[in-house]
Length: 324
Image (cartoon, one colour):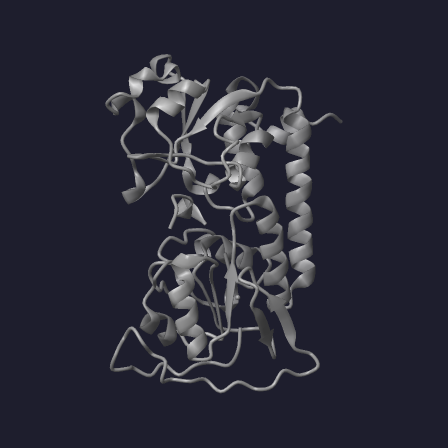
């Protein structure tokens, strides 16, 4: 799992009985009967190219993607959640949903105990074993790739279709698009400050051009110095950071166990001019690292970090910058 799990989605079939199995890692003997797709079947192709057919909207969803969990609440399907990861923290109502543990390599027995009719997980090799095991017992699985703003739009649409809340999903997508467009206008005349995003430090890991954070930095009036790298979360070196000489270092402050050594206390990091001159901007990572319904708030937090002279202080960033 990459550092961008710091963040990041999402969704159905018939309930499965929570029958203990003698070998906890291989519950394949508990096969769930599947009915033949009908005329009104909900059909979705996920990000692994697999076709998902649902005879009705799911009512017992386990989401192993925190961003998808937030989206489900935002489109009115939060009440259908019966399981989420231990990393889910928003909205506050999510705390009432039982945790099934980690989103990557979770306990299959814990998931089965929730009797889901849909499991949402990340697409990719880290989740493949879980995905295959769930499919073997007949559980519908929706695998989602969730790294870019385009992925966000696609995820919202799929979750809206799966839960039969298409109208709410379309409204959410429209509101996000309008908010991001307003930010593009609000920052277009500001100086493009070069930015290093400190995703992790030992070894140094940042964000590349295939990460939504690269797009958010641009919308916030910055330029990611590693935006030319294709990987969403590339590992770099202190020497490479120094060579690109970022004007500002963005330091997302994570709560709990994800806290990291302050940059000023890291051996060797004084080689960076931004560190020597105190241009390290600390902000709460809770909103920024999760690609979901709060993505416009994420841009606002980054804009305040990059351009405090313009965006810090009372009132909304957009209200401060938009022309009448």
